[in-house]
Figure (cartoon, rainbow, N blue to C red):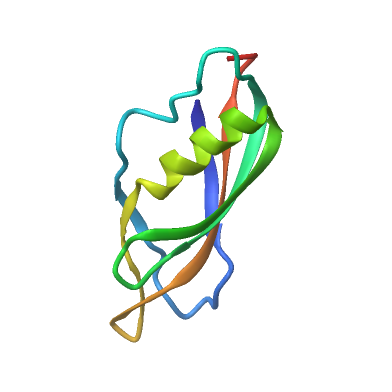
Amino acid sequence: MAAVEARAEAGEDQTAPVRKSCKGRGPRIPEGETVTGLVRAIYVVGADGRVSDVSVTGKASPGALKAIQRYIASCTYTPALRDGKPVPVRWRGELSFPGTR
């Protein structure tokens, strides 16, 4: 799995959140579940750096999408800043999965 560029959907007058950590090296796709190509994720990085409201779509079985969603939700960020203060931001990104897993 390789991360592709992610970007904020908020204004240009703020700094972007920076991912600090996630649980594990990547999503644990259950045996028998499949995922190929790009998976798109939209989620909120809160002012506290926690991830919420995760939505994922792509060429993947339901179990694989759920695993990816759980993985993204496990991440923490240094929050986005506006005027030096932490603010929540809606964030979008893509994960690339080569071949079938």
